[in-house]
Image (cartoon, rainbow, N blue to C red; front, side, top):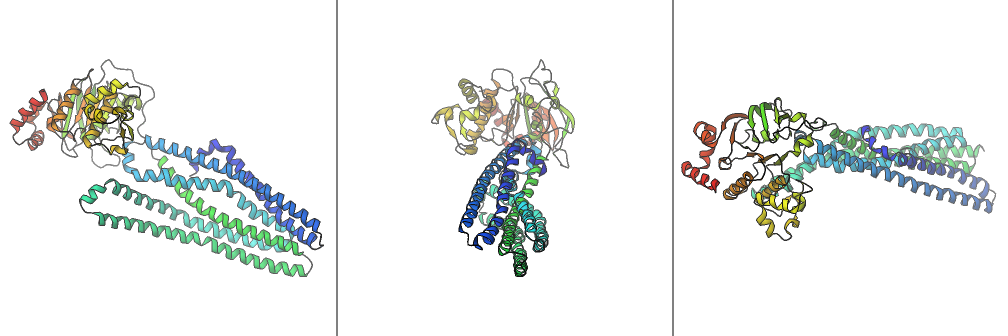
Amino acid sequence: MKKLLVYLKDYKKESILGPLFKLLEASFELIVPLVVASMIDVGIANNDKGYVGKMCLIMAVLGFTGLISAVTAQYFAAKAAVGFATKLRHGLFAHIESLSFTNMDKQGTSTLITRMTSDINQVQSGVNLVLRLFLRSPFIVFGAMVMAFTVDVKAALIFVVVIPLLSVVVFGVMLASIPLFDKVQKNLDKVLGTTRENLTGVRVIRAFGKEENEVEKFDGQTDSLRKIQMTAARISALMNPFTYIIINGGLIMLIYTGALRVELGILTQGQVVALVNYMSQILVELVKLANLIITVTKAVACGNRVQSVFEIPAGMEGKTGNPARQTEQGRVDFEGVSMKYHEGGEEALTDITFHAQKGDTIGVIGGTGSGKTSLVHLIPRFYDVETGCVRVDGVDVRDYDLVSLRDKIGIVMQKAVLFQGTIRENLLWGNESASDEELWQALRISQAEEFVLQKEGGLDARIEQEGRNLSGGQKQRLSIARALVKKPEILILDDSASALDYATDAKLRKAIKEMPGETTVFIVSQRASSLMHADLIIVLDDGCVAAMGKHEQLLESCQVYQEIYYSQFENHSQSGNDLQSLNRH
């Protein structure tokens, strides 16, 4: 939590002025009981209405000045807290954006969303209250005790007993609450994760009739959250009654002692009233302090959770500066590459070696879990290799600045992801300065031109969040167009045509092959038909290369490739002829 306070550095003035104005307000508040005592002992005792009026005017001035100080303090505290939370959110979002794929998968989306929203809101509330009350409440508590000693030492000894007892209660509750509030937030993560999963997969849940099961699962998690919240609330709720018992006990003792000393002529009635007022001020401020402690306890627990995200190492760090550009662009070399995922037991890829020349089309095929996606994700360095190296343009990808490396590469992921906005805005992710002609050219190559023309507004047609108003094939084609707008040296299509029919798939591959410039293309696919035209097909089996070669060679010599091919084409000789004819056209 302490490390997060660096985000307050731009609000040093507000962080100082807020508490100072609160202390100024508290100082005026501490003077009021003395004014009341003087009014009773002098004005009322002597029936001096003029003196009483003057004291009332002084109290009004003190109250008004205190109000102005309080409002000013609130302004500075709110400005600092909101600014702190804004900068913290920006910093956290930037850090999350820098996390590697492995760390993102490990943390989970719902957990990171909770950190960005609920946790930071709690921290913001904590900072606001600390700036307003953290100094004010203790100042009034101890200030009231000091002022009580100026009135009467013996009576003030009651304050010396009461305040330590109250401190034990307040800090005891705080120490018991901190771990509980941390558990509350962790349980909230689980509830949010289940909620997100259910809302995302609602169609699947209904298709399998699992609504009741999911409701039971959700009820179980919310019940667990309720129980831990109840436990934390019960402990926090002990603070107010205990503080009231101690304070009221102190008040009884104070009134009793004060009455005896008034009877003996040691104290005046006004001084007793002043002492009671000081005890009442302590009660009010300790109630505020109790609420402050509860909020700060939550804020500290949430701040520690936010800090834990910052402590996750960022993604791979590239070298500063760019390596010298090679004469041959678009070349990719894998040399003895092995890799495994973070904390993974077995290797996802083992001893992969191949070379792709500029303009080559490389196909990657294999069974589910064979490592196809893992292989192509090493090229833009989404993951690091364990052994061996991956070279782009003859340079190890670890020697590139990451931005420069990924500027060379256009990638279309397995899941087509579009963002809320227009078609134009989504395509410009590939190249912000692309002209309309370049956008339409990318749409023609990706076979998306026809359906974009049919939409009202064309390039300016709206896309809903996650592309909900588009079909799976339309989303895939727009994702491909977005990558093509970039005009990359290396294009990676990671099973990105799975929703396209065979004819559209063939047209797409033909258009990519005929693109101006020699782009090195990697196609990951489960369809043998999509890779038949490739210059080199890599067949993966359980993370290892089963064979490499052209379609005809693999069909003769590679059993894994044969199984994939024949499982898709029963009458393989006829299907093969038909597909080759389709590819030619």
